[in-house]
Amino acid sequence: MVQKMSLRGWVIALLSFIACLLLVNKRLFPEALRNRVKTLNSEGNDPSTAVADPMQDSSQWNSGLKQGRANSKPLPPASDLRSDSRFSGAIDTFDHIQLTMDKLPSKYGNARKYLNGLKEKLFIDDYRFIATSLGVDCAGAKAAFDQVNGAIEVRAERPVSEARSAMGNVQSNALADHCKRLIEESGNPGYSNIAGVFVSRGIEGASQNQLLLDAVIYVAAKTDLEQVLEEDIRHDAGIRKRLDAEFGDQKIGEEWAKVAEESVSESNHVLDAYQSIFQRRLTRHLGAAGDGIMEALGQLKLNNVNFLELRVPCN
Amino acid sequence: MLRAGWNQLRHSRRSRPPHPSGQLNCHNLTQLQMSRSRLQFRRILRIFVLVFLFVLILEKQQPLFASIDKLGTVVGLASDLYSGHMALDGRTTLTPALAVHTWRRDYYGYYKNRPFSAKHRITRNTFTGDYIYEYRELQSNGTYSVSKEMFIVEHLRRRNYRCDRSVPASEWVPAQKNIYNVLEDFVVAFYHASPPAKTGLHPPGAPYKFIARTGAVSFQNNCNPIDPLSVEVDCRVIMLKDWGTVYERFPLVDAEYAWPPSVSGEKAFIMGDGSIQ
Image (cartoon, rainbow over all chains, first blue to last red; front, side, top):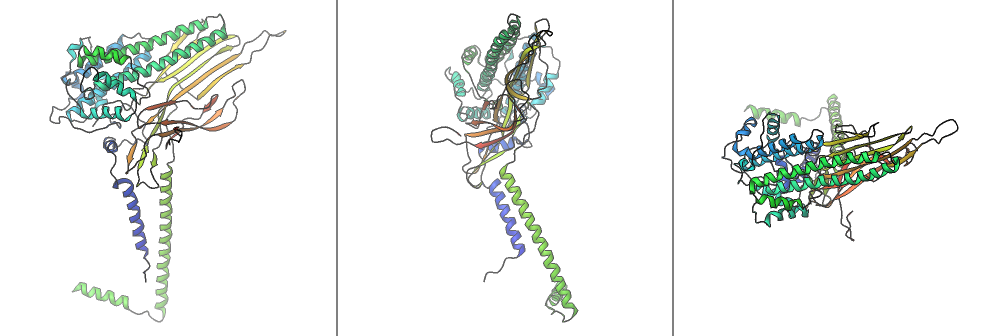
């Protein structure tokens, strides 16, 4: 005869069942690679509750965790970045953007906002690239940017040939993996087209040293702004027609068109600045070959990009 | 030695027969108390099990909420997709996010015969997620002033209407033009706040369906005041991959949307005719 199970037995059985459920749910099966990476990189950064901040240091869009040269000289404190030759490229981009911003007419406040965003983004990417290549923590990227951005410096124009970075030939496998996944998994043909620009010119390893990522960021940012601009132009033209119809010969539509043109001009300044900034970065790496690359990239478009994906992975 | 003595004493206590008189009642009372405490324990256990099952069901249901101000990023609570009935087959956790990508409002017309015209425009800086503002306003001298200072967006509406309350001239009162035209529109961007997290052997993959659900109050597209008709509307997009962004408009024109919407993710399915739902 089967003996009736005791209460304690039931409790133990229930608890064991719950424990099994939890185990099956959380631990038993290995997580996918990207998940593991995400878990490792986003500790204390709960994506379900936190607002995704594109400038946060802990990237959730990482794809690999390959250490670089752990025995290299550690990163200097943020206050000494300018004197470290490994950061000369990053500082050159920073200064170039700042000088471009300073030259803008005072009324172009929105252009300055766009460029300020790019300045921060590129500096953080550069810092991350240097840190990951050296195999050190890159969590201080944002703080380093704030330090450099807050310091008062007298910046002078200098030829691009003087701005070659000591990191010029360094390659990052983590970045290459990230770019590979972008191209292969996103299903967005725009990425392949951009990669093709380098391949068709016989430039190897563009995905490993920020060249490909730079190109992707440039084309994506250009496309995004061009689309906003096109819609603005179309919309403003429609409003102009409506104003002319409503107000007749009161020249209100004409005045409207003047303001609209000014707004278009401001956006074009930003587009020109984008080109100048990325051209300088490419030229620093590739010399004169950078011109041809920029010309080809100028013809391309990259739509529907999540900008959170377009960043140097941080380990 | 001492331990052996103690065991003997314990054994003798257990095996002692019940006393025929008052001690029997005492024993019964103890048994009664024990069974009562057992009953209580079972009741507590039952409640515990019910609470546990309730929490489990809640977790499966994934109640959705979103926080944040009117324009900022809205990250939905993670939505879990399952391949089968249990997590054994595979699970994909989506963190769908939504942000207002562009917003425009143009209004123009006459107020007491004086023309007015203004435009508000907001675009999102894709690098930083910050918003870029522009405000143009017709001045009394016929030119436009332009401001790039931040302003508050109190409502998110889609509108396209004209209201003409002009008064024709009569014997005693001159004609008065009161015309109000409004064009307002906004576009939202859907994207993965973080890459879909996948566990198990066969986690569900793309395509996914992202849904932003919110209340909307309809306007009439003329001079009538707000129509009290309130409806719940969904803005749905299909995410074809674990990457990328999709831009979309909320479906109702001449409506004001309650904000922020709740954002959720679901599995989308490829139908027989090749369409995705």
